Length: 263
DNA sequence: CTCCATGTTTAGAA
DNA sequence: CTTCTAAACATGGA
Image (cartoon, rainbow, N blue to C red; front, top):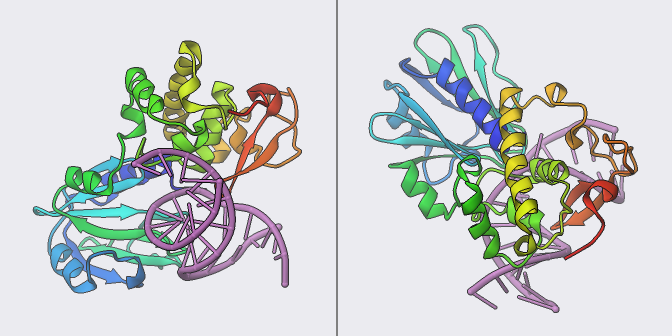
C-alpha cells in the first residue's frame, strides 16, 4: 500500500481524526518500529499534548506537536487506522495514540519494516535523508533536469527516492504503462513528447489514485494495477502482460503498448 | 517446501 | 563515482 497516494490518504485520515485532541496515553506495543527515539522520549513528547498539523513528503508523513514533529514511514505493510472508543486495536498495531475523547489513532504494520521517529523540522529531515522533491511537486522542467542526470532506466529513476520522493514499485509500473514507456527505456534518452507524456501521466496517476483513496477496487479497470500477473491480457487489449525482474522486484508491463526495446 | 510481496539498507560487482 | 544485483530485515499468503 504505502506509496505517495496511500500516504496522502493516511495524512488526511490523521488530519481529520487526530488533530487538536489531547493525547492521554501513548501505547507503544512494539518498540521495534521506533527509530532514533525511545519509548520514554516518545511518551514524554506526545503525552498531554496534541497534534496540530500534518505534512507529507514522498512516502513520509509528519505531524507537529509543540515544537517537535512525529515522523512516520509505512514500509510495505503499514497504515493508519482510526479507532473509536471501544474498538480493539488491530493485531499488528505497533503504536496507538489514545485521545481524551476515547478515540485513538493506530499505526499498524504487519511486517514491522516501517518506522516512527521524531524530528525538529520536516525540511531538515528530508535534507538529511537525501530525499528528492515530492513527486507531485515536480514540474516538467524539473523532470527534464532530473532525468538528464541519470544513466539507467526509467523505472529505477522513478523509484529512486533520492531523485524523486514518493513513487514505488506499483505506481512506477502504472505511470510507465499509462505513458506507454518501457521500464528500461534510458531515462536521459527521452524526446520532448515522451517526457511530456511521462510528466502528465505521473501527475494524473498519482492524483487520481489519491482521489479514489488509493483503493485499488476504485481505480479504473483499465489500469495495470489491477492486472499485475504474468501472462494476463493487457487491459488495453493490445497484448499480454509480462513480468521482468528489476532490482529484485517484479516489474509488470505490456510489450505491445510499451515497446520491447531496452536502453 | 517454494516463491512472492506496495520499502530500504548494505555489500559487492561491473 | 554511478548503477545494478542479491541479500537482509520480519511476516505472512498462495
